[in-house]
Image (cartoon, rainbow, N blue to C red; front, side, top):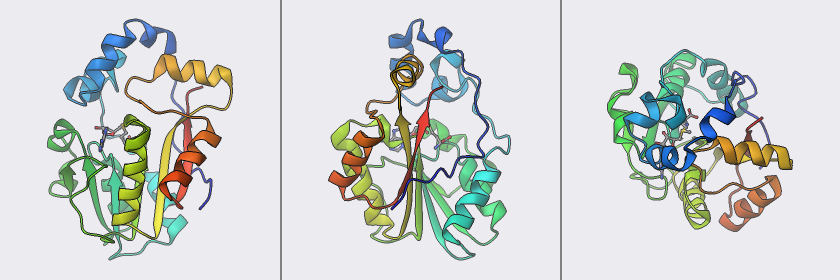
Length: 217
Ligand SMILES: C[S@@+](CC[C@H](N)C(=O)[O-])C[C@H]1O[C@@H](n2cnc3c(N)ncnc32)[C@H](O)[C@@H]1O
């Protein structure tokens, strides 16, 4: 288990934290339905248009290299949204069998054409897959949408379906300033700790995979 940033090649976002802070409570309620407004509505309520642009290709390359994944291996993206990473993992490594699960019916119905049939609607707390059905599982910025107990359940569920190679990324902060930025920016996260707090939660869940943080700068 280790701290490793598999998203270090993800583009850094320019965020207008102050603009989102206005009406944040109302926007947060809308965002937490994970419907059209969250993915393809106004920026104040979520992504402001969640469109494929290839930005996950370098991350897919790093994930494949990190675990030495090869054609025939089965990978699960938990909180896969419209399946951008699912698609890019299969493009970078033809023959890799990649699947996704997400709570959002809207995202799955509006997924990339290449991943139709590979994405399931469901919660990371209770996934519709047999034990040990994957060689690797990834979850980026999804489980923190649950409360503390939900995060513990989601991590145990991840280990149930994939016992070998796991990576989790969650909202976190290392300074008071980062904490303030995060609180003004995030719409959907329910649980956010500093790295030590997250490590305690990982240990409570018995999670022994890799992990890293999403910091709002
Ligand atoms: C911030 S987005 C991240 C999407 C994608 N992983 C990425 O990094 O671009 C959070 C995703 O988690 C999904 N989500 C929220 N709660 C979930 C749950 N309980 N189980 C599975 N997915 C969930 C949302 O629908 C959304 O697609």
